[in-house]
Length: 478
Figure (tube, rainbow, N blue to C red):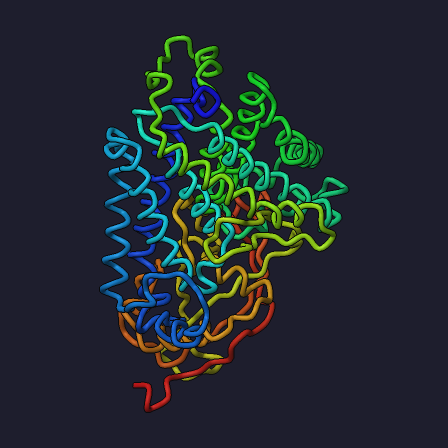
């Protein structure tokens, strides 16, 4: 087993397994909290109806057998409990088949959720989590050394993630090529965080340096992940530092955190000890890998290499796909982000009133947790938690179709549906029904330092149009 075992990667294994399990834990908790209101039996896009429409398709999900909100919550909390055990490292104390089964369990439970999640689960980091979780299952337990091929597949994952994102930028918007993308990005990104205002107001020459650094980190550095040590560890460190910069400047759910975790697949123990001499790692005895485990890992590796062809071809295609999955198991994926940059920010503001619509009507605004609303409210930090409704509201403001979910949302706000109201930060009617509701479009921009000092606002906004004219519940809906 000399060539099968990756000696000196114990820290990498611990970070990959425990860190990925921690993200699964967060994802399951978010599903238990948000899925019923968004996709449940009485949700905005009910999963039971989706399952009926896709009855003839071969979509792997546990909910083919049965769906109810109670069952969904049971699945989510079971997944969260299993993930918590993996975070604590308890299954890793046993033989390698124990973490293999535990990771396999949480991977399939979350796959079942994603595959019925429709547009609310249509984000690239869902596939990223599923692919990382599947690979983590084959890292073994503390009784064996991490397999070389699994670490290689993790590095291939990082490479696709970073290199694909770099290529989609160069092929997409010209602002990435003329280095002006960050003149706009911090202000127009889906969900700014508390530091975004400050990042936006950095000097423009520094913004250009940031874009150059991003191109280097995504188009040059990933190649060196496959080099011998210590080059691979240095490349991983650069990826990690770049991702930490993104964590500081925005809310991108668990995308950046998970990228940091999988980048540790290229960091060996010696590199860590060179920086932290007091660090020590206990590695398994060489040659202790069971034959059955090696066979299973090699079979999985062969399957993943077979599936790697489509993502590889996609990287060099003129019609490169961004955040696409090439199989129903989400194990062969293309990644990328921000192939185009929005220059101006629009926000959909939902308002209700107890009056009759007219010039004297008093309209009150619903407040969301993450998306901009009240100009005087400093953006909050939510990542790595994922606020799915807030993200879909951003896409809606870009002009994306709300499909069937946005009218349903307005209807549920008119009915003061308690489950829906829990997704919001502010219900201006304290659980009562408004008589009318409407949706307006506002143009938002970050305030200048002078405007912040004078008016204590982080945003300046002005009306830009009407998305939905005032409407009320029909008698049969009451």
